[in-house]
Amino acid sequence: MRHNEPVAIEFSERIRRIPVYPAAGGYALPEDVAPLASNESPDPPLPEVLEAARRALAGANRYPDPTSGRLRRALSDRYGVPGARIAIGNGSCDILLAAGEALLEPGAELVYAWPSFSVYPHLAAASGATAVTVGLDAAHRHDLDAMAAEITAATRLVIVCNPNNPTSTALPFADIAAFAERVPRHVALMVDEAYCEFSLLDDPDTTLDLLGRHSNLVLLRTFSKVHGLCGLRVGFALCGSEDFPRAVDQVRQPFFCNVAAQAAAVEALRHQDAVAARVERAIVARVEMESGLNALGIEPADSQANFCWFDLPQSADEGDVVRGLSERGVLVRAGAALGRDGALRVTYGTPAQNARFLDALGAVL
Ligand SMILES: *Cc1c(COP(=O)(O)O)cnc(C)c1O
Image 1 (cartoon, protein in one colour):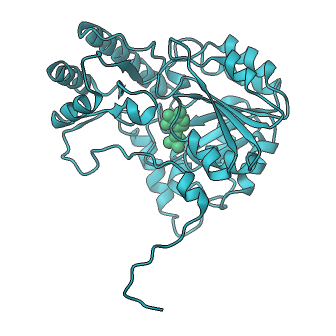
Image 2 (cartoon, helix red, strand yellow):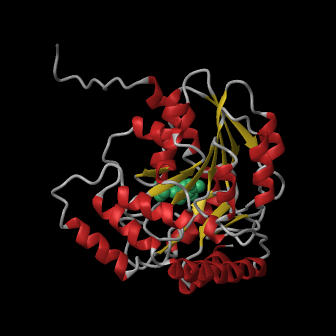
Image 3 (cartoon, rainbow, N blue to C red):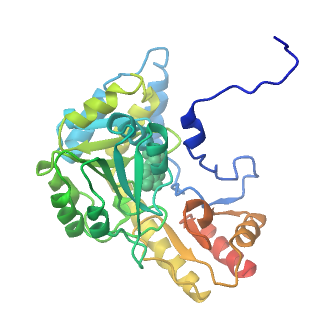
């Protein structure tokens, strides 16, 4: 054995398959950038939420409650779903990846739309299952008829992202309800509702009604977006049966949700008025951004989220635009990395950040 030769570690086959998610820039940049690349909330956590997290940290010499008991009770009270039908995660991505592990294997199939959330491709890559992707319609929305047509005897999981990331569009409740009727009982139907609070199409609680009718339904939600706690990593799933929470708990380490995250999430649920205020600000931003984009000759997709999605003018090069914006301190997400060349995804920030983005885009174009 010669020790002076560099020999690369041999990793598993799946490491070659799993896509690497491009990190948003800006973590090492000066304070005054406008970070509009990750669909975060521009508002800092509420003082009461920070205080709850701080108090919980005083007990950080103890492991967190592995059942997230207080949080599941608080979620159960808020959403009217029994605690045993609620899964908790280290962010909702943790539940997504665990669902892949619990449901998928070589020979199994997974159906989702594309472009959609960048984490979905990991599920098939990590498990060796087959991903069946279905294009969006001309208005950048899910084509549920086409998705239903892709369900086979091998399908284990269907994911509908509503509102959809990165395209910001949503389908109305009636479409989701009709689709749920068409998905066979033994196939898990996950509706990723990370942005549901921002949609004006329906009350975000409407889909809860479907849980009583469909034991295979999983509504994936998060504290990362409207609650503005993405740095703490806590998400949850409201489920039509106890089987799903049990299965995702089986494939994970027991202490996936830390003490500060659990306490902060419980406190955040007590402030539904703050949720409503954040939604209102996002909707004001939506109107401002839409009219600002229209003034530049750009027609964004019909946003029901806290971000917008649009094709750049034919003459503009996506790479040049993203670079030009970043030179002006505005960070956005390039469409190429998300499945559509020549498109941009831009999170709504503070009024000042939005104005800065619109000025910068005007200058770059
Ligand atoms: C942001 C986002 C999530 C939430 O991820 P967390 O892990 O909870 O931070 C889930 N789904 C979609 C589509 C998202 O955009």
